[in-house]
Image (cartoon, rainbow, N blue to C red; front, side, top):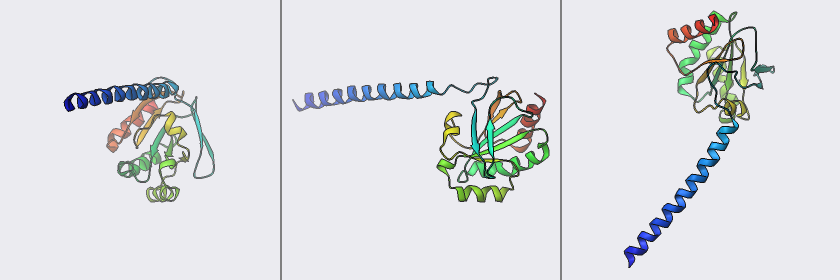
Length: 177
């Protein structure tokens, strides 16, 4: 008799768990549908953020130069690895590209972010995503993540940490597109 009771309890538990997962899956699907997937060749979502310099910066739509949007955080080890390369390559190509470093401030410390920017000598706009809205729109799952956007406002490529020479090749291809 005890064996039947245990089996019935396990069966009920499995049914409840299945219903819960079904409802949770529906909620995730609805949230994902509200944010369209970013696809190569299509226009990137627009957003505006304040920069550390107090300026307002806009992403989305046509512009004079291609744009790299790099999402990062000061606590992120790979972000520290790629930071010197981003700074050097920006200095080399700054007349031909724009680079916005978007700090995911919602999950970071503004003090640490400022220290990071100073440490690596960023001379390009550093935007503060204090509410996490830009990261949500761009579906940032981990940092660093960079979006290479052509001058028409279309996504060319999504990249993560690359060796410096490979990153430079991607930047050159973006400029030539």
